[in-house]
Length: 78
Image (cartoon, rainbow, N blue to C red):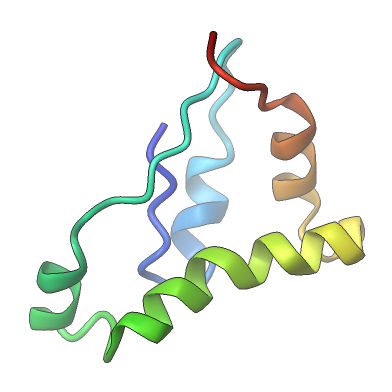
């Protein structure tokens, strides 16, 4: 699964609907494409879209229930 975080939460919610036994989290290297298409304005926005939901769900699991469930199920690859 690629955690696409260029859009503000919508993509994350769609991708988190998938069920799988093992997960691989990747941050896409598509900054230039997202910027050219006007999806994001700068690299800071890309990082905010990735990490803000992760920090929020760590403090308050109810803030992003699907992300909370996903993180409980995610485990490191061997």
